[in-house]
Amino acid sequence: MSRNEQEMKDLLRALTLCAGAPGAEDEVRALIRENLEGVGELSYDGLGSILCERSGGADSPRVLIDGHMDEVGFMVQSITKEGLVNFVPLGGWWAHVLLSQRVDIITSDGKVPGVIGSTPPHFLSAKKREQLLELEDMYIDIGATSDEAAAGMGIQIGDTIVPHAEFTELKDPDILSSKAFDNRAGIALMVETLLEFSSREHPNTIIGVGAAQEEIGCRGAVTASEKASPDVGIVLEGTPADDIPGFTEPQAILGKGPQIRFYDPTAISNRRLAELVAEIASEAEIEIQMAVRRSGGTDAKSIHLHRGGVPTVVIGVPARYIHSHVSLIHWQDYLNTARLVCELVARLDSAAVENLTDFG
Ligand SMILES: [Zn+2]
Image (cartoon, rainbow, N blue to C red; front, side):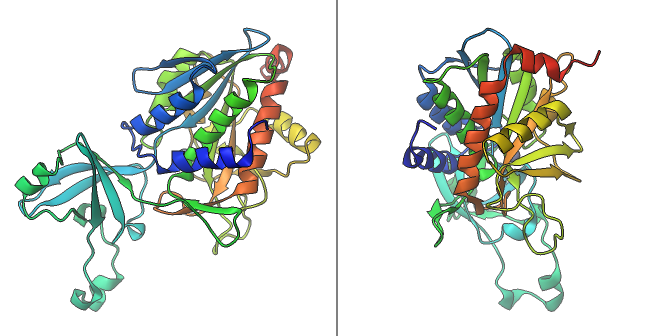
C-alpha cells in the first residue's frame, strides 16, 4: 500500500467515530467525500449513497467496491411528559447490550448526550432480574425534566441515535476497539483502495460506493447499483467474528486474515470469483478464512441481483461483538484485507470478468 499505517489507522478511527444511523449517514458521507475529492468523479444516489468513479486503463469492466456507511442505531419515537426519550431500533440489536450505555442523539442543533436508563438491582425482584428487557420498555435519559425541556435541547421525533464510543488500542496494539467496525472497516477499505489506485494503474473502471441503509435491508445498494451499473461486485464488511465461547468451528477468527463469505441466506458469492480471490491470496501469502454462514446478510443481497445478475464476492474483516457499543478487530487483518482487495482489483480486466459469467 502506498499510504502508511498511521494514515490508514487515522482514517479508520475517524470513520468509526462518525455518527451514521441508517438514513442519516451524513458524517460518514462527508468524510468519504473529503478523502476522495479529486480521486474520481463523485456522485450520489437518491437515498444518499456516495459513488466515486475512477477510470483506469479501460472503460470496462466496471468494478463496484461497496461498503455500507450506516451503523446500527435508533430513532426517537416519542418523548414522555417527564422528558424521557422512547426509541425504535434501526437494525439488529440484542437488548442485553444496551442498558446503562451512553448514546448520542443527533438533532438539527447538534449532538445531545444521553444514557439508556436501567433499574438498579435493589429495585428488581428475583424474577425481574432473570428477564430480558424489551427495547420497547427502555428509554433514554438526557437529563431533561419535561417534554418541553427535551424539545428545548433540540430533540425531535425522528432524530437518529447512535452509540457513544471511543477508539482505543488494547494492550496488544494490534487489537483495536471502537463502535461500528461494522461497517466503517469496509468503508475505510473502500476509500483506501481508491487512494491506492490514484497512483497505480488498473485495467478497469473502479466505482467505490458508500451505500446507505444496509442495516435495515440493504436498500442503498439497490439504488447505488442502478447508478454504478457494475460488471462485478466486491462487498467489504466488518463481519461478525465467531472465535468466542460457544462456537466449535469458527470461520472468523481475529488475526487469521480476511474472511471470504461464500454463502449466507441472502447471497452466494460467484464461485469463480471466490476461487480467484483465494488464488490471489495464496500468491500474495495472505491467510484467508472461508465462511458459510447460517444467518445474516450483506449488500451482496442487492448487488448480485442487479440487472441480469452481477458476479459478487463478500470480503470481511472479522470483528468481535458487533452491533454493540464496542467491537474488536485485528489491525493485521485490516491491512491484509486492504492488500488482498487491491491485488484483486488489479487483476480484474475484461477477460477475467467475462470468465466469471461464461456459463455457455
Ligand atoms: Zn455490516
